[in-house]
Image (cartoon, rainbow, N blue to C red; front, side):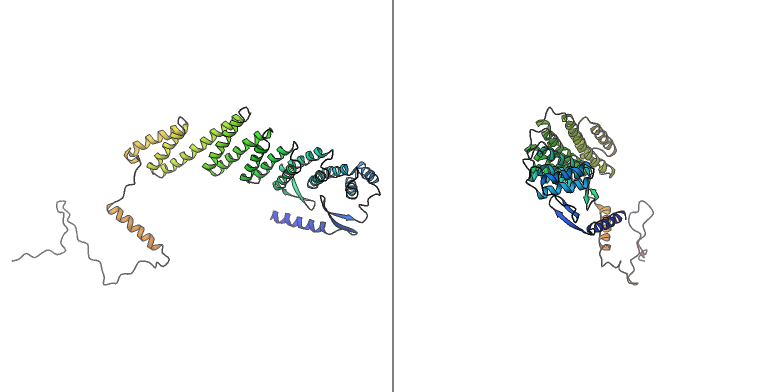
Length: 391
């Protein structure tokens, strides 16, 4: 119900937004998006310097929206002027001050693409990186001016944009790492691992490569814990071992070693759980097989001691012969016949065309069972009619 109300509120707000004010028009500009524009609202001065003074005056007075409109107008009309690059940077800064981080990011992006040799290139990249981090930490994407749900996908797109537009900046390795973080938060584990691997391969000398190498193992570790996946445990162990081999002096080595131990513990715990399951089902032969596997995997551990103790208890309970692996015993005699008969009845009754057991005709009565002698030394049945001796 709450979701429905929120959706209706957004639709209503969009409807209001999309209905331009009297004397205003709806305008789309690259890098700026959609906005309403009143007649004469963005009137631009006859020179770039005059327009700059106008924008600075509005900014000084604290009218950030008018200042923003003035700076955008300057860039639009005088894109090659000496003050255009600074004005484009101002557009991004003012959007930030107005807390419209989506448009701020795009404005900085326009600076990077339009003025790749501008003196504020690094400043614009850093501003983009900080905005992308806000989204990674839960900032909400705006839709027609309204904040929606937190968008990890938007954070991912932002970091990807930084890597693409500034691949040699100091923020590129961090951005590539954060692509992995955003993908992790979206539950895209395989894609996250691939993103971390790019960090290791593309930026091997950056300190963040160490964290990326560790994170690969950590993603596999979480996957193994969530799904009890033996393959994921193996990959996690290999990743941590690779991490230790590549970074023997890293402060995370001890953590990686603990993670490897926990992986081994998870393996043993899983096998022990299987053994206990079969034990509870009284399938002692299968239980002993798994108890022995625990002893083999982790000798000297508490789990191993538990397995040993239970095996001894089972030997006392059912005997060693009953615990030896081998073919199952085949039931014979009356018990086996009864079991087959019951199974046949179940199979027949489960058929969709089964109408119940047949009704016997009245005249077909089963013969009376013979009476048995009471004396223990008389083994034969009692005749139904005593024989008449000849005279």
